[in-house]
Length: 387
Image (cartoon, rainbow, N blue to C red; front, side, top):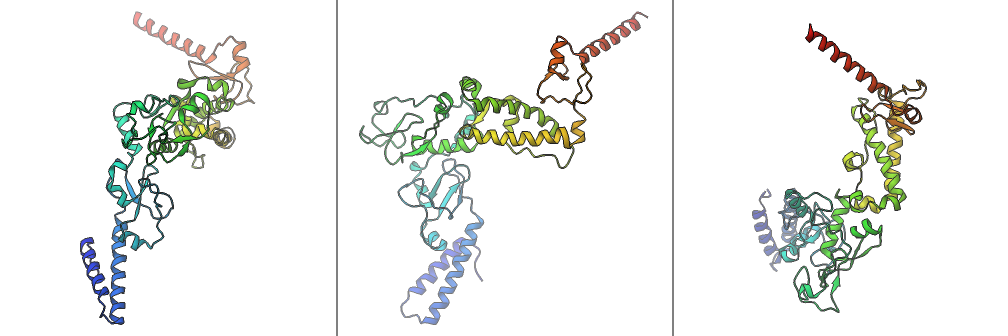
């Protein structure tokens, strides 16, 4: 029977390996020993897989990942994928781990050199949020100034990450933070720079350091939002797609209110990020959304059309929450807050034809009725008090 303890397994594996190496062992006995050793290795592998989550290192939460081929994020020059059977790879301490939060991959043996392990961006952002820093331009981790270069002399001619001495000829600049790095800390990775996108609508990829690469990859994949209106409101005047997207998002915010209270089991699913139909974040976008603004526009248009058909045609419950224009009394035209050519009363949110509303000098019949009713109630109360 095989032991269920890693220590006992390793002890037995060592014993069987010594027995196999004995030269005088006959062929049949050696085959039996090898079979037993294979069983022990398989059991060891199963126990290792049951505990795939490793301890945290520099904020990373690691899991085993022996499938994809890429480079180790610590040694860089050594291939992460080793063409060996998984059992032998684990024996050589060359199994590979990947962070569950970011794109950090490394040999397990490389994690011992903690000075070369880059801090996980998730941990940094969590700390910033705990200190009350919102996930936008106020977050100190997000550099929104275009390549804020200070010069190599300000770094004492040392790499910004590892403090190794570097010369002007071999120093590599990161376009994200303007700092200089050695060849080990700057592998000539390319990325879109958030500051250039927001201020210049420039999506050209530029050279960045290894640490900046992990940070920007995290920003792209996670909903770290940029408020366009606050950071650069001129983009709405220069980028036609952003204006169109904002209008669609405003209408989606109104449509979602209908969908949330709709009790139909077949109602459409909201297949986009929640901030895209949040009124308080109407000007906020992630870096990935800004980079793929046309794809975002198509995605929002599809959702807009799906919700529009459900509310105005398919669902009787949602249709019943529509409005008829009380000013022209046209019972053939059902109006909704997201319909085109409509006007909303700012007080009671009633909906009218835009032309009818402006023709009546923005006088809302519903508000008028409510005021008259309130005056009547107040009058009756005053009479009762007098009696």
